[in-house]
Length: 452
Image (cartoon, rainbow, N blue to C red; front, side, top):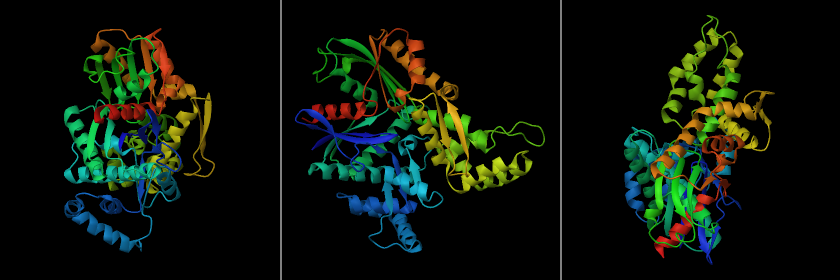
């Protein structure tokens, strides 16, 4: 059976064509979108779970991961686990388990953000292969249960660039991880399509006239733009190469907006702007590392022994030691992802409200703060400027002015972002699509075309 697979930074989804109509399959209970998150009682148990789900090439995988599988057995013994115990969770279940016991186990949100990271050693590439495979296996199995058929051929979405630096090498590494994971999950045929182009294909069926459209996909990890000729004369062409006039993309997306909001509006509660006894300004690097949940280097630094010792000294040097104590507690309890998740929820809620109250009692009883929409605008100004620059670059590359701007992606709902786009792009009509479903719908449609 043929499907489109959106392995997204924020959410994952699978679509199939059912009697000519695109239908998304349930992948998280009865929901058709699953948050991109995984929690395991121990890191090594992820590899063990992957080994159980591989149908073809399992012996080769076991030989390749022999050290990790031996460590998984030790972890099972140390945790006193039996064969039937559930040891790995994805989606909403992963968040529930992590929130319940953040200092134990292994939690990762938005693993797609890390796939193109520069300088990943082979063992880390293998580890990310296992994380992605574990998630893909689970999603695919859930989707297959709902249809009663095997999913064998897929088109997976990809950003224009997974990373800004060494983009070609980064892209090859990330695509290799995704393809390896897809094949270990049981897909026999795997192709990729640019996410903004997929989003545009979904939108195109609505057009009654030919238009040049700037497609803007603000995803969780990347923002991608494509200038595409669309409409009735283009819709059913098998070769759309000539219709795609330009595309741009960069590793800046919804996660970056969440992190900026967390750093600007939440980190001051943990001492980022507190005075030092010496009168010197508070160094900010460690506070920024605390919320940089999409940066491997920052996460490693923040969790290092050196940072623990540094924070102990900083608490002695700070004129407000109690607030540094909050940061020490946050680090000890591994609650940084939870803090950024709360910033993300605040960003989402500010789409409909002028201000929101953020309850941080999971860190300290009665701790909270109020964030206004204009404070969100100030916090995300820099990443938003980069997104706008991508749009302008796509228009410049194409050498034509778009007739329409089609925006998709969860963050595209924000009035702050829409206002910024309108200010720069002028009177060009700005249209919305399905902010979460456009990409997977387009991927599914493209899969039907190339595999028919």
